[in-house]
Length: 110
Image 1 (spheres, rainbow, N blue to C red):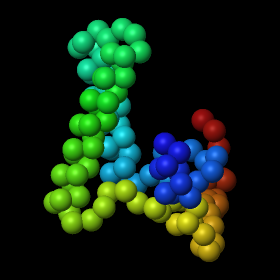
Image 2: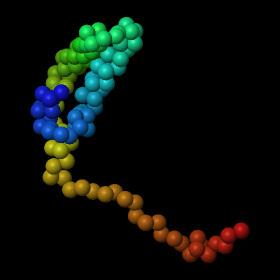
Image 3: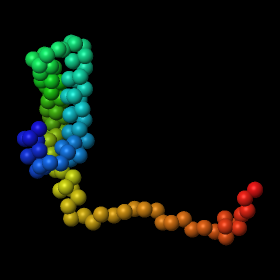
Image 4: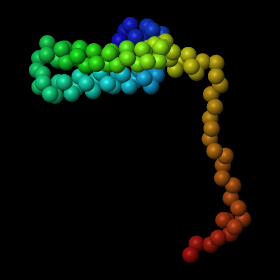
């Protein structure tokens, strides 16, 4: 994870906040696969759990390589939210305040 934070040029920020959709999906695939293997195998102890994690990561890794082969580009992006938002003014798109009409204000409660 530290190596991946270096690729994204992050220090203390949450890594997931700076991942692309594909990066998030592959992370979730590895985690879900690891969890499923753990439940199916009823793994107990550090060594069996480590094997489950490595197998789950391998599934995500093979999927990443397949996506890269199909698209011809790397799934791993050096981009992060800080870079994407740098130099762009922040906009607040709040709706304009509702105007009251004379009909609304003249209605009496029933």
